[in-house]
Length: 565
Image (cartoon, rainbow, N blue to C red; front, side):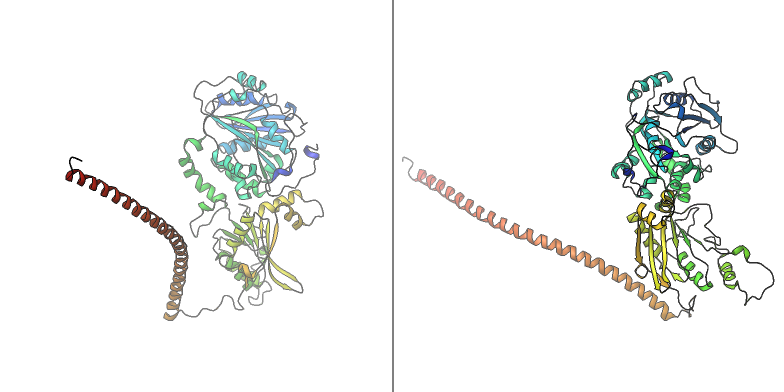
């Protein structure tokens, strides 16, 4: 098999890694180097077991090194006697603290082609590293995840020597008592989506759990590594950014590990969620249920819209329509030579840069609009929308486009707005993850949209049916004073709309009642038939009973009249 750095880059469609065929454990020759990064804070006893298990891994020791990062432990950590051959201990640098800070310190020191992050309360099985690394030999944009068994053992822990002996004997399953607790939510997502192969992009990212996970070093560094401003929820945030970079998530049940004790999410879920929600809402636009407040703005928008510079009225109309739509977290970028706009003396009305100045004056102080060559670098939105200046999306157009792309997990929607002899005017909604994936696998000279269609899908639709229209000839349109008649018309329009909704509801209810009435009518007919049968049976029984009573009465009369007979 072709492995490692010399392999051709395979094309994985969405998250369907089924095109990859991993080798059987122990039946292949690894070539990639891996650095295992272990962040640790006051976990000497469990750290000793983690290192003992790493010393018994089936992945070649010459390709593996370990960095333990002491995140400000009260008693400084030390390296025990039983560790992998190339293991070193460093301290978190000054200026921060927490797991993300410690992991990033290890990433900065790592030299491996793959970076494997493992928590200090994990005891991996002997094939743990090998099982994940085989996927990295197949594609350079895979994020591999381990399979965790929890133990809530309260008794004495095994010694490092016992752990190593258990791994060498293949008896890891007997090291700890198995807890009933599991990552049920993650395992359900994986199970319901064929091992995550059919999971949509916005869902696959949710199972990124950092207790045992491995990354291509180049991919991890390309997204900036860890968000060291976070002390919790750092895994969720990193998973989101990796998705936007084109990552494919592969959970491997053969990469098993013990988790000693229960994590915070299992011990105090409500408190953890209360803490994490504000940070996740600000950084992960996929969590739409956390962004329900109208009018709010967020660090990372849901849609990055791009409107090219053109005539002032054209740009204003398009930007106004985007900001006035039903998706509140839209960030608009208008690229242009803004820095070239000088402040020197000029003819205000005959300025060759007049349109540019008017656009600048209109949106300079709107925080949702950025006058720059590219969106600001403080967060990559999951969707990018390109709209030609002078075209106005309807109020719900952007939401409908995004919903359609999400429903089909597509890569791009090309919206045909107009056709002229010069060509087709197009608006375009793109999935950031799809663009990144296409860039990762494209070969020199390939047409980008062909690659995009292959890895995620590209679809054409017409603009009119999706609510796009040209701006009015006069923009902004002149508004006459609102009269009492206008107010009454608006009120009546609202009442008519309400009555229409009520009428539709009543019609639906009437249809249901008719269905039920038809069913009841059929039931009534059956009951009538049964009642008639019961009546006939009752009459027959009554006649039989009457004859019996009559016979008894005749016999009694006879006994009274003829006592001697």
